[in-house]
Image (cartoon, rainbow, N blue to C red; front, side):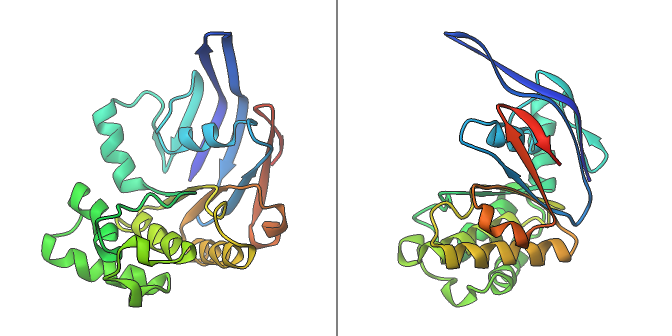
Length: 222
């Protein structure tokens, strides 16, 4: 599902060039649940952003689902991203003025993957899948952190993307809730989704298929 070949990302800074990741070769299969680990500043989020087409490599190739995305035009890339990638963030990124169901419907509204009349029904089905259907008409402020993250996962699934990318999704959750979120990702992978998670949570390693560690932008395990 995902293939990176000799991927390097270099940023130009006031202090000079900064190599965020260097010479990454990585293959991730469909339905695999992979964690990217490493210390802060090791290049984890940069690597994840390149997998999702948010950032482009300075050199090398990124192929997702058979599509090479490193040189794709921005408009086409945005449309591809909406269909192919579901993002989950550490701080949930739910719109505070929308209910849980409305937040889940938002990607469908943008991508128009379903007729408008069917979007709420799908949103409720996804909220039920992640265990928070009873919170459907509540605003994010009325939800716990774990409930908000479950809504965010439902939103990431809205357009039925084959790939879920999560950046520190348990960073603001207690350990018990974090483990529950990782189990949910595992269930999604068992249903065929490819799940890639950036995490510091080494104690959750038993819940994933494989761990990839970065040190100073270089891969030391795969």
